[in-house]
Length: 514
Image (cartoon, rainbow, N blue to C red; front, top):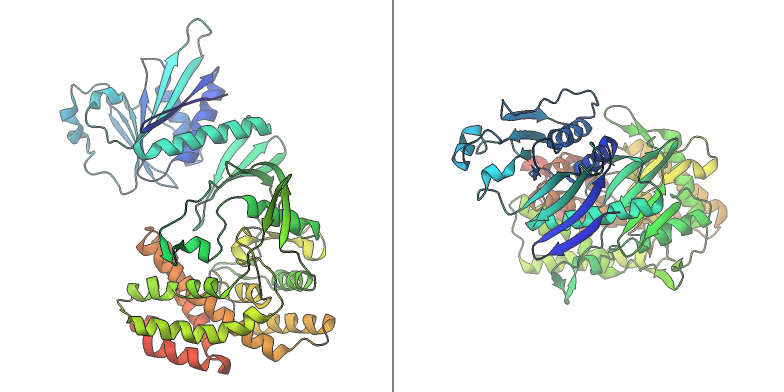
């Protein structure tokens, strides 16, 4: 069990390593915590196992157990072009002083490189304040291969080391200490996932620390509060259990630490609902997704869900303020990226047009809106039957709102081209299904609400993807902008959105005109 010590500016924990297998497991833990640009130092006497540790870490990151990882004692620096980031492995033992560091090329490292340094004492006084140190010591009174390790995070990495200790403790308490941990490539969220394999058993570790409130943006409230975004894992657990209760394939929660934001959940596999290159909808899987929404929407669903003894989750309502602040992401991020400055008066006219269009949607009987019901969060489970063949992920931001929202999320998928022909066919499938069980269902009114919410969602996503580039340094999402822009134009062409279309024509330049 790791022992955690925290002092001002640092976090530290100790681990006993009785054999090389334990050392490898620790190396994997460290590897899963690394981010581009990190500095990791390896401290310890000769023979303490620094190179063994580095070799295990590099091989894991490379995904090659037999990768040749020579000691850089004589070359001083070894470079590795790994899938997640470049890695520089340096050994400073032969340096006579820190003045020689510049000769090793530390001033000209690849962008985002992780640097792994043995014998960091040779660079005393020149190490940056944000780093992680792995100190290995021998235990000759125990046995030859026994080591002690102290992991210390300095500066910005202190919190990450603290989190690492908590994750190791949670995994141990859940019975998965011996599991192989494989980090899963993340998306735009701050959550991280690892697949844990213990023999034939596979589960997922969800690592979702509580999100701090951001700065107030309106009426003293942060964006997350206005938009009703989950700030802990409590909504996820509530919705997962609720969906499963009604027969839908949300992951089973095996173990949970609600305070720490750590979950061991069912592994639903990785078979998507799209196929090809570029990926395109698999028709029968999208039809099943439509049928799932029909099955969900025919139920009267509660807005309060149990989570644990004396803990419940109240599903928030998708109110006007939430819809508007999402749509305004287009003004706050997308327009600035196009070098468009909007007068405050036009912001008010934007909000006024949206209020008129959104009110009918808000007035409809509410249901669970999973909110990100699209291909990245849907898995195909061929061994199950009917709508249970569709696995559901990423529903922690669920709200009570209009049925049309998730339909629009599915049929105008921001990451996959859904042709207008397929969209109309699946939309027709949904409308026919609703009319079959609800004789008073009004298709015309539903379509008006559908195109309104599709336009609202497209506006929000254009803003989010621009923000991911401008604020978070994630330009990879910009490749989706043309697709989302095309969806927006598709929705704005409907006669019900004539006033909104006129506003966009007047104030939002076309992507191809920039």
